[in-house]
Length: 502
Image (tube, rainbow, N blue to C red; front, side, top):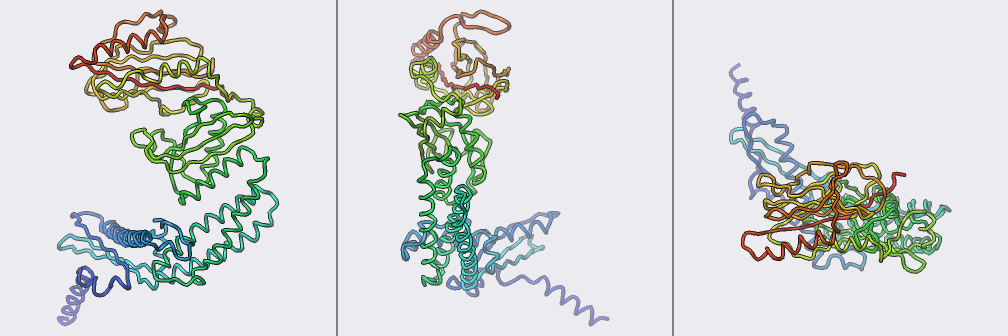
């Protein structure tokens, strides 16, 4: 019995022994850089923590560390010229090509250890470069076989829309192939036959040639033209997991949308959602925006995907355009033009183009849909929010499409407790026709405003003086007071287009 007890004690002690890979020198000597990629992680854990979750966490961290090291190494080598081999590899390598899941399929191994005495968890991942190369070659062979089969079948499809859809899928697969080829080149494979570079070029040439045949047809629908542009964007971005919101296109880059804008917005949203993740948030970091111009017998449509910073477009990620015959737009029976001489543009420039610079504070007014190219349907609820940087009195104006002017709020005070946040205004209203474009204007300042001349009807304060006089008097007061120490002001506004529910 005593000897059995000794054996059991020795067995337990051995089972808790710390693995050698925890030591940095051991990892470097037994998993050298020339033959392996490795990832390592560690973290302290508290008494009572779920050890299974702790173990999973360090496992995932180690795998992430490994995939990040591959990605950084590969993109660094690509910059030095890996992409020039035979002129066929891509100029950049996608992170998706070295995800944890993709590596698991080609020999990635992970170990974990919990030191309960020191309360430290360790994770270690490693993969042999030869295994990585073999795995990626196997995947490359499989996908190239699928591409060949799909391409042969797609060329026999008579319906151009279906054929185009199939060809688009092939083009996306070919883009994935470039990532695999880049990885193999990075791992030392340079043989064109192994990389299948000849097949890749041939398939790509056939697909592009078929695209040109389909696109050369002049009788393309608006939906088809949208799909063509989105396919170009998909290929250029090289990442169908991109996430962005979509704003309705505006007439002549004015920020004013129309019934046609709403119709186009619905087509664009449906088509985009099959390729990308479309967000509802109006303050998304990436936004697809655009505008359109009737010109001659065509309507030119432009779309741009921007990365935004504080609601300002900073980086253009994609830009594209196409034209459709104006007769096709007219057939829709939707409003798509706004007269340059009409009241809409006069109000637009007068209300939205501030004649003053910011006077020491920021003041923004927005809706639950944001403040860009806004479209509301008749009967929809519109909520207003204000965000200001300093305590101030607010003047909030509403100018309708028929010229009616309302004072929504005057001398409404926001104190320090509500600064730099979206403050809901103490009302909401239901959008109604006459349909068209109307405006919301916010002016904020450190001193109370002079009283407006209004007439109250059915609980609404109708401004009896012109909006030009109201804005002129307010801005004039700001200019006079601006030099005075302690005075500050800010203003902003937006247009919103109401359309019939049907």
